[in-house]
Amino acid sequence: MLLLFRCFVGSSEPSAAAARSSGSGSESGGSEKKAVRRMRSATARLRSLSLDDLSRALASSGLHAFTQAELSAATRGLSSSNFIGEGGFGPVYKGFLDERLRPGEIEPQHVAVKYLDADGPQGHREWLAEVVYLGMLKHPHLVKLIGYGCQDEQRMLVYEYMARGSLEHHLFKNLLSTLPWCTRLKIAVGAAKGLAFLHEADTPVIYRDFKASNILLDSDYTAKLSDFGLAKEGPQGDDTHVTTRVMGTHGYAAPEYILTGHLTAKSDVYSFGVVLLELLSGRRSVDKRRRGREQHLVDWARPYLRHTERLHRVMDPCLDGQYSAKAAHKAAMLAYNCLHSVPKSRPTMRDVVDALQPLLAMCSDVPAGPFVYTVPPESEDNGKADDDEAVAAAAAARKKCLASAVHSHAEGDHRTFANQRCASSVAGHRSSSASSSPKESRDRGA
Image: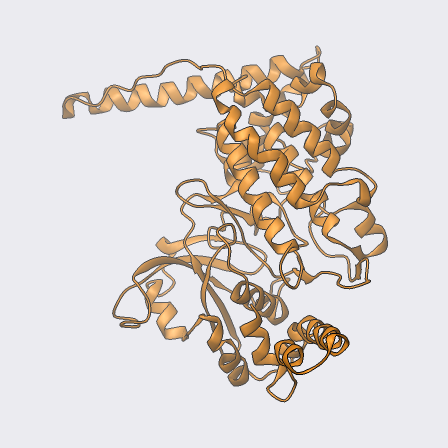
C-alpha cells in the first residue's frame, strides 16, 4: 500500500523510515506525522496527474493498463451475449483474457469489464477512486482489480469475474431459489471482514456505499466488496470525523451522516446493520410497495429484534423455518446494535466479525428440511416428462413460499398478500419505484 503512495509523494520528501534511522525520538514522531499527512493527500494529488503520469504512478501497484482494442477483443466487441448488467458506473461485460493478449504477463482468466457511462451519475473522479483504492488494498473479501483502461474519453475497469453475481440478485430477484441460512451467515461474515480490513488499514478507508448490490459472490458464495467510487479516507490522529458531501444510497446511509455530513467508520457499521437485516428478513431496506411503516425496513423491524418471541415476524418466510433460532437471535441483536441511533454505541467492524464468526458453527442446529431426490433422465423419451416435473416442482416450492409468507403476516387483509417477500420479488421486475436504481441490475464485475 505504501509503495503506491510513494509514487505520488515524490522522492524529494524524506520517508518516515529514513527519519527514524537518522533522528531522535521527537524527530521520528514528527516524520511519522508528516508521512501520514502525505498519505492522506495522495488521492488528491492523483487527480492533478496527467494520464501518462497516472499510468507511470500505477505501474508499481501491479495493475495492468489495457488499451480499448484489447478490452474490445476480450469482450468479443462488446457482444450483447457478453453483457452482464449495468450499474451506476456504466455497462458491464464478461470477457476473457487469453494468453495471446499479454504473453507471460497475464494468466488466462475470465474477467468483468466495466465501461464508464459518460452520461451517467459517475465520472472520472469515481473511476480514479476505484483504481487508487483497489490498486493499493488487497484482501480476500475485496474484489480484485486486474487493470484499467484510460484512452481518450473512455474509462474502463477490469475485475475478476464473480460467477454468482450480487447479493441483491439472490435476495430480491431470484424467483427459483432462496439463499440457505448458513450461506447468508457466510456472506455476512465475509462482508464484515472486508469492511473491518478497510477500517483497520494503515490509512483507514470508509466505504460509504455498503449495500446488497455492492456485495458480489464468487462460485463458492464468498462475499467480496466492490464499487469503491464513493470511498473516502477516514479521520486520523485527533480528528473524529470527515466532513463531506452526503453521498450513498437511501435506506443504507447512517442518519447522523445524512443530517450533518460527518462521516466516520460507524457510518459503515450502520449500513452493515441494514444489510444484515436484509439477510435476516429477505426484505429491501426501502420498499414503497409495502404498507405504512413497513416501507422502511429499519423502522419496522428494529423493535422486534430484541425479543426472541417476536423475531419470527422479521425472519424471511422463504427460509421456511430452516435456521438456528439461537443464531438468528444473536444475529438480530447484532443488527440491533449496529443500527443504534448513537454512533458511539455501535460496535466496531472487528467486534461485528468476532460476534458473527461463531454463528457459523451453529449451522448444525438448523432443523432438517424435507429430503428431495431428483431422478436423472433415463432416456430421451423421458426428457419432456422430466422437464414438466421440474417445472411443477419449482412452482410447488414457490407456492409454498408464498403461502408461508401470507400465513406469517396476514391479518385478515387480502392486500397483505401483495406485501410478502416472494410476491414483492415478482412485482420487483415490473416496478420502477423499487429502492435500487434500474441501472443497478446484475453487476457481476463490481
